[in-house]
Image (cartoon, rainbow, N blue to C red; front, side):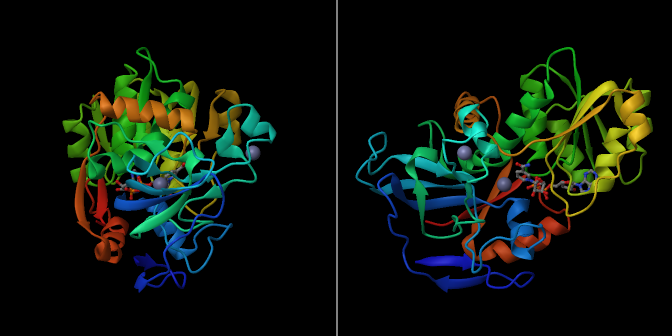
Length: 337
Ligand code: NAD
Ligand code: ZN
Ligand code: ZN
């Protein structure tokens, strides 16, 4: 089968004819992939940016959506022909404390699609059937694909942040994740401020109903937001520790900085202000299967939509280049079959 493969960190992905994935156990399914969104995480993976490295060679992609082609002998909730998506959380043990307390995303024994196991920049993928999400009938493949990472991740972060009608939420970084975070904050009834360094991303945020926008390239984010009254919650998706610091300065006393973006840098947070102003900083990683179900429900009801464009699988290196240059409006989705 055709796949785009990372063979060496920092080198372009290579189009390869790879062996078709096989069922590894009784709960597995084989999914024929129709589309897969390109997440900035895939770029980090291809560059080997993070302390824990992915497997090599690697087929990235954790927004893969398609049709179930084969099911393992103990799979009862899925049938051949079902439309599903294969998220980042490939599997978790189901037995540890985080798994048992509703935090399977923190399982130390988890596998990650397109990172510790091969993902969906390919014609087929093997998934643990217990962790795939069923696609609502109303949604087509390309449109639903980004909900499997950008959507569920920011839905969860907005939940963790506690967005509500009386809260002001600032979204730092309005790319694939951020433009969806903005919509979840609005669904929660919050007042929203969008921050980016690209004018086109700020325009998209305005189109999606942001109450205010701030251009971090030309304005001081902390001071500008404080002049607007300060913010209760930041959803930080920018790939920049400097941006995290700037949005920390935008918080009201007692405010919460929810970090989602994963730049390979240290976090420059001043302890004195953190303590005296009772602010908090928290990380948020993707979402559980329950979060995914809720995300897909919001998508099916038309409450949150991804702004996306479609290109062929082979375009991924070019897309990575545009992603690094900040030239993408929302999400790019690879059309695979
Ligand atoms: P993206 O490239 O689509 O978006 C990043 C956005 O940040 C762009 O719009 C860019 O212009 C903007 N930006 C850059 N510098 C900025 C600054 N100084 N201030 C404000 N905005 C700035 O990336 P994405 O796919 O949305 O992913 C964002 C990050 O989130 C990546 O690091 C990715 O690995 C991470 N991620 C985390 C999780 C998680 O579960 N925590 C899940 C998916 C992705
Ligand atoms: Zn992702
Ligand atoms: Zn576990």
